[in-house]
Amino acid sequence: MSSTDPAAWAGYAEHPPRVGFFTDTSVCIGCKACEVACKTWNAVPEDGILLSGMSYDNTVSLDASTWRHVAFVEQPTDSSDGVRWLMSSDVCKHCTEAACLDVCPTGALMRTEFGTVVVQDDVCNGCGYCVSACPFGVIARRESDGAAHKCTLCYDRIGDGLTPACAQACPTESIQFGPLDELRERAQARVSELQESGETRARLYLESPEDGVGGAGAFFLLLDEPEVYGLPPDPVVTTRDLPRMWRRVAVAGASLAAGALIACLGAGRRRA
Amino acid sequence: MSQRTGRGVRGGEELMVPRARPDSYYGRPVLKETVWEAPDIAGYLFLGGLAGASSLLAAFAQLSGNRELPRVSKVAAAGAIGVSLAALVHDLGRPGRFLNMLRVFKVTSPMSVGTWLLTGYGPMAGAAAASAVTGRLPRVGAVATAGAAALGAGVATYTAALICDTAVPAWHEGYREMPFLFAGSAASAAGGLGLLATRPESSREAARFAVIGAAIELTAKSLLIRRLGPAAEPYQAGRVGTVMEAAEVLTAAGLAGAVLSGRSRAVSALSGAALLTASALTRFGVFEAGRVSARDPKYTVAPQRQRLAERTGRGSA
Image (tube, rainbow over all chains, first blue to last red; front, top):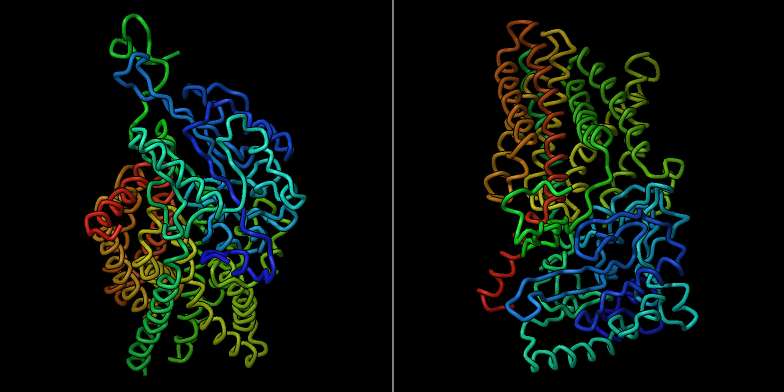
């Protein structure tokens, strides 16, 4: 049992090993098979057909009806073809410390036995708190049904021993699925290999349990700063500060009561 | 199609793709903008504060022997919380399922805590008002008045945790001062309503509460802006800046009017109206500042970059 075992925290005494995604963006070819496979398997509704003008990215961002999103970055370089292509398939991070799950007031968001985070559609009442709590802008509310939706890490497939649809469809193994401990080892080896071969900007993102979300179930190998891909460089789960917030609310509430008392004490005496 | 002319043309070819800013993905926000609607939720921040603080004022004014003010404040509290509940349910994506809030109690979710606070507070505020207006069941009325006051302190201030416990930069980063800003704003609204709706001989407690509240609100707001530094920009720039400034001017004017309110009914009513308006503007301003800060990736990325740099600088990365 690893030090970050969210399924155990959630009360699963016996549970399968924590699983996740390792998305190695260095081998992503931008084919969008993951986007299509995800939509198909999960029956996610169409989310608009438009041309965004953002390179080959017409999906634009993760959303209630977009659970995999391939980012395309064109960086001008001095090389012969004049451009460096960065492609990355983004997804819900299934955080160890998940803000969406913490703030959900109905219990619709829950931790599965695999350590992943899913929304129970029949419970969600569409309050939208998770939308503002997510430090990655992943979860969103769908107009058509008023509820929050996001990647389930194919909860219905992994329970049957299948690979999630996106990873199954990925032709280059850019998206790898498996037990998180194994994925982390594989990722360390891969990033070392890339750095030795001269790709000095290669780095792992959200793989460390020491980071602001306690490490993610879905982590990435990036070839540039996270913000280049639209990811926050140092996300911290908001609920880490919540105990301090509650303490201040308590002091402010007591001050408010004291203010009312003081306002009335003096006034009463003068009237009498 | 492209609005660029001249400079955008390179070698006869127009640049169709906007140049990627190195610190963002095509200028797209990192965060999702809140799905909360301003009239519902900013309106609730105001009305919930007004209700909670009015219940406190009603209870203590009653103890000090005031007869008119407690009745006014109790009716205001019940009315404000009634409208609030309607707004909160209306804002849900699936309003028919609002009772799902009562499936669980989670201290990690300020919305869950708030739901249970309101579940206790709403009926108490209603019973206190009903008893005050009809004169019936005075004992039940007294218990409800005390209960509404106790829970009212929570109702008026938990909303600070509600908005600060998010990834929204302008809200989250303000979590130290927000509870005091909201408490002050609530007191100044409740005091303002008392000034507006009672005769001067009965509004002394309201005037004093308003003065205390307005002073706390102005202090907390200036501390918030000063501590945030460059991250305070969403509170200061553009339309939000105008709203926040107007709120400050009205609060200061209302505060001055409340100090002088014993002399004239007109001054008293005017300052009460100014304070109520100021409190509402403050809540809408804070709400919109959050929205602005979530929309522009720079408010998400820059502070995180700075945090990283500081950590690396200290060598503990």
